[in-house]
Length: 409
Image 1 (spheres, rainbow, N blue to C red):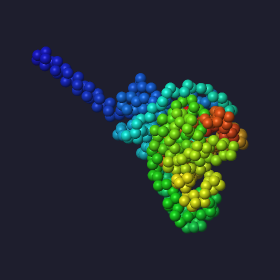
Image 2: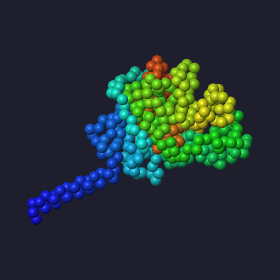
Image 3: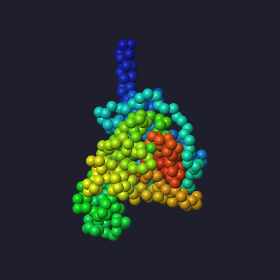
Image 4: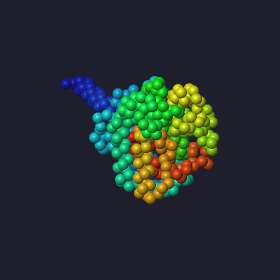
């Protein structure tokens, strides 16, 4: 064999090796260990993954709490169009995967430009703690919460943390509430409680969103109002989600930190907090209210009849599913510490309602703080001490270890 033939053979072998190596990599190009190490947050690597700053590894306001285990998927966003889309799954958490997995990684919509944060990220700051130091609950409390989280996951399409058409139909079928006045009193009938006259109207099937679980809302961001969001520029990451839940709090001056996308607005009316609603925020899909009586006070009578607000349909939490988590956690913690005072915050209820709905392929929390230091739009407004934010943040971290959420600043 001539030297020329040997050279040609060598080139062919190298090409085959390179091709095989590329083929092997392409089988799972979105695996966490395939992320280019020199890519910084807000940039894409050669595989098209958008890297984001992972959740904090420290535990605020709880020196005795263990460092949370953060799923690898909380560190990046793969493109949605990929057939190899990974999940925050049970393999990453050291458990056998279930028959039905629903926690897909946050993806960018096909054809939509990938968001990039403008300017340099805000330097990390240490904010003053308004809440007292928190000691973690017992192992028993954790077992109770984990059992609830796994129960929600196993329930799949009928976990029903939020009233969808399927959930309402299932409830009517099981309780015979279609026979007005129905079964029992309104106090025992959560479906009727959302109607002003406590009766199920004849057109009730047209009054609930026909969103299918699991994953009907795609990737979800739930945006609270903690001032810890001002420590980083995550606005573009928030807006990259399919569905963004947020309060009707100001966003114009804070878009780089909190985003601007508002698919579902959790409408809040507080006399002493004039900032809510001041920008005349508009939801693109749904509005939510914490409780019906506030809606009846501020909504029009025509809104009551159509179960809508500001021209968009309403989405109501069932309350019962979320209560399984925050109710049990608060009760257990107060019993263990022999305290009587303590109630879940509205943000805690919203987060647990969304998680328990199984309507999201992934749930990411932003602006949930254990410090209770202030609200991002009002530095003088701190969280009430009746809310044990250390406990609530412990609930979110436990859910993150179970693969249910990613908890960002």
